[in-house]
Image (cartoon, rainbow, N blue to C red; front, side, top):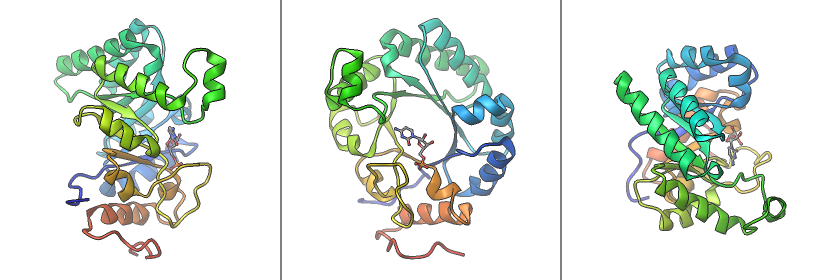
Length: 252
Ligand code: C5P
């Protein structure tokens, strides 16, 4: 990397079962991360109250509910998420360009009415759980890379300015898409922990160098003995001029 990153690109996935655990985790890591991610399990069990409570701790929220429905329904869901004050949210690119345009319009118009920052609408292309056999079952394109590229182009043409992608897709999407498109990447491992169920991983710094704008990191932070120290260690590794030794311990 030519120069260290200036704003913290780390988004901690709050993949914990209860609102109280999520709130505690969010408060402890808030000074050392750029945002926290609330997914379907936490939102369905704890609802909008958990978004408001975590928001009160001052950390930006990425609401990862992956909307996919008719354009009118998605627009209303995006408007509701915008009213909650979230800073990023997700839709499925496979919902089509009209649905994505409706999502972006709802985010822009609701934010402008409320005079709050417009949330970043992120498109999910092909779920990383899907391979070419799974695509074949659906009919149409069976080449995963070709389908990712097709949906990424469709999303950008529909006005979407961010995509969720795997670490392996970063170099190709950076070639393909305008440089202003924000790329959000899970599958990050520091080298100090096991890969868990992630098959293809990159270290935080490698992912930034490959073109990621944001890094979604779950277990390497929330399952660490000291999540705040783990988050600080990752942030330090991104700011330093020289890559850290992965065997170094996080600061006490
Ligand atoms: O614990 P870990 O760092 O693997 O968590 C990654 C987070 O990113 C989880 O919330 C997971 O659901 C999410 N995610 C992912 N792979 C994708 C999309 C989202 O791991 N393709």
